[in-house]
Image (cartoon, rainbow, N blue to C red; front, top):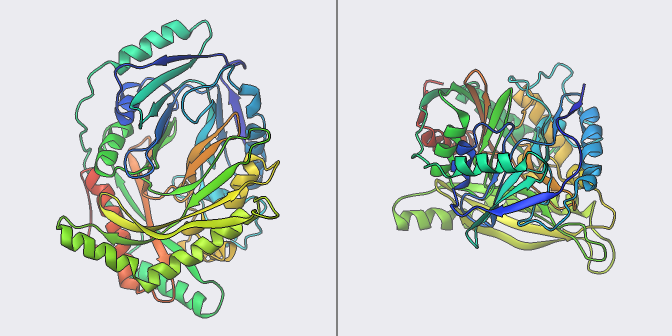
Length: 468
């Protein structure tokens, strides 16, 4: 059953202090290792890299188990009550206290009538559908201004907590150490390629236009997942990275993809909601000419541009469900098919936005866009049914979202691609996938998934057993 555990009493009077020695967010995550239930939203590189946020010691713990309908209902209750936690003054950065957490892909869309296999098992690690909490203690980095602030609930324990936290943040941050390890495929290459062919058959039959098919890698990593996150993100600096830890495990994300961000709900002012779908992937090269050629080829790739165009259309439709109607309303495409480069890959990216209709609640906005169309396919619900039948199990947090909803209704969530799920035992799961269209080549699609995994594993000092 869903549960929400209260850990402290209500009320939020913030104390804000600038941190003179600005630690890197990943270093701060390690430095504050004694703080429970950390959530880091990390603009580690790329664009936009405006702010990072590290919450810890939540006022309320939110941990929701299946069924999905009950989890959505409880999440709505939590998010609808956030205004009661509003701070008594404006805080630095975009987050004004509120919910920080991760949502499992297996929440699906609220109210969606999916025809899923009756015997579909849960994701093998069987983690919660939602994990997070209500946070009033956090660090926030304003990267453009190179400033960092510590925000604490100003209760009787605040002076002692502040002294302890500042002392921990003042410690030297050692160089990241890759944990090492070995991963293997849970699904063989021939089996995954047959899955790609099965998606193509569904496209030929007119059931779908595309679907994002994934497979799972499993391994073991020694040490602390916070240390592993530092190593991972040093090798994969991306704008929507993140980390969340809870007693049963941790989630480490090097995601370059935004699900959505939305402005605060200020009476009389319009609210803009934005999404940035990614489709099309090419490797990077250390040779500048070769690197440029790979990017140029991706920009003119008919298959990749068509795939992105389909997802842009899907996102416009999703945004249209919550957009303001009338003249100037509806969703619009701000930029189409531009190239973005990251440490090991380059992608095609587009920007879609809309002015939000009055009265749309945070959970209604999440429900309209979740899960992201770029990691399901088109049409969304039918492609999710195809994915479930072919992948044969739930996805867990992979292709879910990590982010925040604050006390003013501002929100931002990533899409949990390039993300590892870590159990307390040291067992680690990594799913990788890609969009399949009629033009897809099964061997090439499988190789692309391994290329996506390679940069993550390299950042961890880990390897992949090639025998499967």
